[in-house]
Image 1: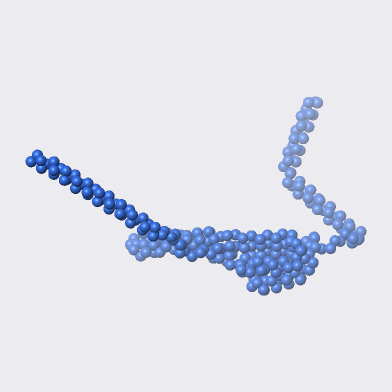
Image 2: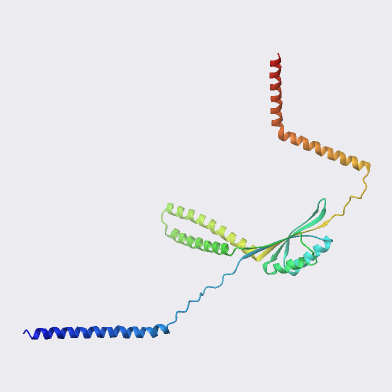
Amino acid sequence: MKTILPIFILFFLFSCKNDVDNMEAVYVSAAEMSEPMADKVSYAPSESSSPEIEQKIIKTAKLTFETDDLAETTEQVRKAVKENKASIEKDVEGKNNHSIYRKITVRIPNQNFEAFITAVGKGISYFDEKEISSDDVTAEFIDTEARLKAKKTLEARYLELLKKAGKVSEILEIEKELSTIREEIESKEGQLKYMQSQVAMSSVYLEFYKTKPAESGVAQSYGNKMGNALETGFLKVSSLFLWILNVWPFILILVVLFFIIRRRFKRKKA
């Protein structure tokens, strides 16, 4: 019995060692198999399937220049308007002490903006003012669209609640919320329509003028000189009167102080 026990212990240890060796062999073979598999697997970056976002850009231009012939320049502008499928929104003409001018506001399709500016600028040596700006409202447009979609989803949920409402108080409360939501939806829709209009049609503000010839060499009659002198004098008197109306409280205070100081001096002398 004493001889059998050591033999059994040795057999048990030998079998455990064989199991460990077998397990290590399994782990090694698994590791070796995983290496070529890892080489074969490629981790390609996933391509975005979302479509490109269309940019929303509002373009405006302001042009000011001098011309020798107002009628010819006006005709040139009208021709450019017709060729580029634009429309004249506003047309103002007038004169001042130094020039005769014309101001025209044009609304033009966005894709024809640059062509119109080039057509109007033909034959102009320099501009007194040439300002061209581009305002990117893409982010604002997307944000407004998202808010509008969320409001419409909320409206649909409230409509479902309205169908299930049983009490009059619940119905009134839901209708009140629906009214507020619908006002916000209309506001967002109006903002989107305005931005779409501004993006689709650019604005160009034109101002061109013709300088009046100098009249310094023209002789004035004595009567004209008298009339001009009377007019100038009347304007100066009017200006003085208006100035007095502006400062009359201070004048009143000064007069009162003058009489108080004068009375005190008289008492001292007496």
